[in-house]
Amino acid sequence: MNREKLKTVKRIVVKIGTSSLILANGQINLKNMDDLAFTLSSLRNEGYDIILVTSGAIGVGLNVLGLDKRPSEIAQQQALASIGQVELMSLYNHMFARYQQKVSQLLLTNDVIEYPESRQNASMSLQAILSMGIIPIINENDAVSVDEMDHKTKFGDNDRLGAIVTNLADADLLIMLSDIDGLYDKNPNIFDDAKLIDNVSEITETLMKAAGGAGSRFGTGGMTSKLEAAKLIFDTDKQMVLTNGARIREIRDIINGKKKGTYFGQ
Ligand SMILES: Nc1ncnc2c1ncn2[C@@H]1O[C@H](COP(=O)(O)OP(=O)(O)O)[C@@H](O)[C@H]1O
Ligand SMILES: N[C@@H](CCC(=O)OP(=O)(O)O)C(=O)O
Image (cartoon, rainbow, N blue to C red):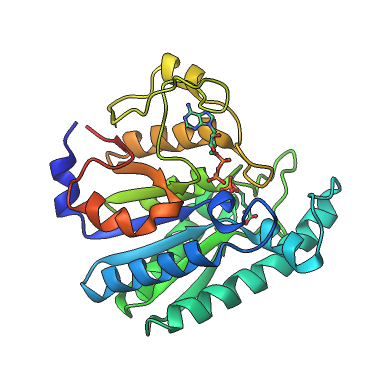
């Protein structure tokens, strides 16, 4: 367990969850989005390769249509994601442009990553975008991804997608931004005495039991899906830091090795 390794990272994937992009009242969290655009653009200027994995298509879709909860029908959810994704990218495009940073969009499905040829193709596309100094912004292609018996196109959730992209891009570090300071030893929604864990070197059964579901009505996987993502990170010998999306500017402290959030690494 050594945060010293964080000081040598060159390529960083940042995953931001819906809970950091949408306020409790359903409005867009412009402060977090602007902090994200500023921080990632300045890191890019300093020479880091940056990839953003974003959630929020459905949350922003609800905002655009003035709805307060997800529809239950799949086709309705997909329509919402399709509407929200355009608005989400439009917001990012404007926010990043303020800092003279160009962005691109990549919408992925699980089958693209599973098939070696399309995976290689996605990887080459990503490399080409990065070599142009552009920040690729990645989400699942929610408008078309569904799971059928023999054709699985869904990733499950964007925490998993964040870990998959870290591997696909051969990045050194995944920064997972959520609405909480890191991983606690118990679900902090239920236990007042829950303590923040500083370092995790292995995903044990005890840790999995400590992880509960989503904290907001917009988040999906909760802490369980973040730990599943951490398992993929360990499998591929990468590092991950889980931290609060309300303090995005602390990413700089994190890559300077400071004790912020929960560090997953060996
Ligand atoms: N052991 C735990 N440590 C930290 N958070 C936990 C834990 N168990 C459950 N949670 C909940 O997981 C939530 C984060 O997951 P989620 O709502 O899916 O966020 P996001 O939209 O960022 O993916 C936290 O707000 C918290 O309420
Ligand atoms: N792809 C979906 C997000 C799915 C997801 O995992 O959401 P979250 O738990 O907020 O990271 C969307 O853009 O709405």
